[in-house]
Amino acid sequence: MLVNISLQRVVDNSYDITIDTLPKLHFDTKVAIVTNPKVAGLHLGYLLSRISAKELYIITVPDGEEYKNQQSVDLILESLFNHRFNRKSMLIAFGGGVIGDMSGYVASIYQRGIDFIQIPTTLLSQVDASVGGKTGMNNSYGKNLIGAFHQPRSVYIDPYFLTTLPTREFGAGIAEVVKMAVTFNKDFFEFLESADLNNPAVLQEAIKQAVQTKAWVVGEDEKEHGLRAALNYGHTFGHVIENETKYKKFLHGEAVAIGMVMANNTAVKMNLMSKEEALRVERLLQKYNLATTYLIADAESFYETFYLDKKSSDTSIKFILPIGIGDVKITDECGRELVMEVLREFGKKA
Image (cartoon, rainbow, N blue to C red; front, side, top):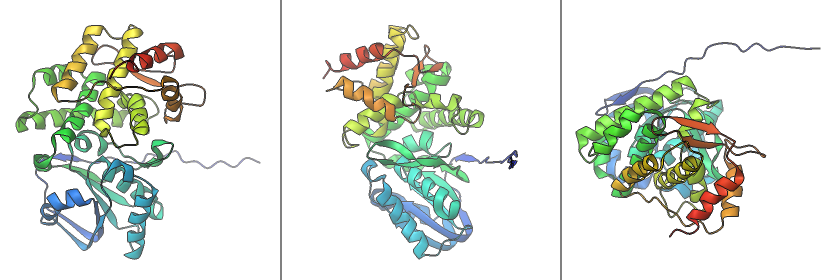
């Protein structure tokens, strides 16, 4: 006997991304703002002056990538249960990528799914993590290996939050901006080469272009069946670096910057990118004080960790490699020895 369940229908997950001063927001339901102590200390007062709800709660979780785990997720869930949130209730992710990813994941699983809004406060989360509906948490095996696709109801990108951003956090966000340009937009990359992103007006234009690029990619491939995987350029290598350093030495964007250099070196060896193009990318990253090298202590161990990447299988590893500047290739045909050669070169660098 064969029973078919027909689920062929169109689900509209569209939403707006506002890049401007945060508007006044009112919700006729229970709302929980998920944040961390650092963001709350700097900006919670500003947010509360612009938001109202039937009932409003603040949930604070520890700050840092190492807290993007099941314990923090449980803390958020317990608060929602204690305050009797229902399916009409809402979460607001107020912080960087860690807060956004965990809040979105909780929203995806609480009573099988509730709405959430992203109000990102770091450059990295504004240009990348808050857009596209990827949610999740880390575990001992790696980064973002547990999660779900759950699109926010809306995203509000207020440049005001960047006025208190530390220099390292700013650079980490720039790495994700450069990623967008190298993979999809050569003109944008050339704009970045000559731009001073310390100028607020120039930075806002860069944010707009990065978000437009991300929005186009997500619109083409929401669930990462193909094209969207290209946005992981630099991440395959970068996630291993984060894992090896227990998420303590590098910010996410810093690890991605090094990962891009590793990916570029691989692309150069495969004649996909010229040495001069790879050097241009490296110079742009260094312009914002991003590290472009990492000492690999054990190349074999580093390579084996690639298999924990979500894009890989148990027999092959997918790499995201640039084709020059402005184009990209997703491939599982990088020879092991070629990649090992790249890794060994980084084993010689301090």
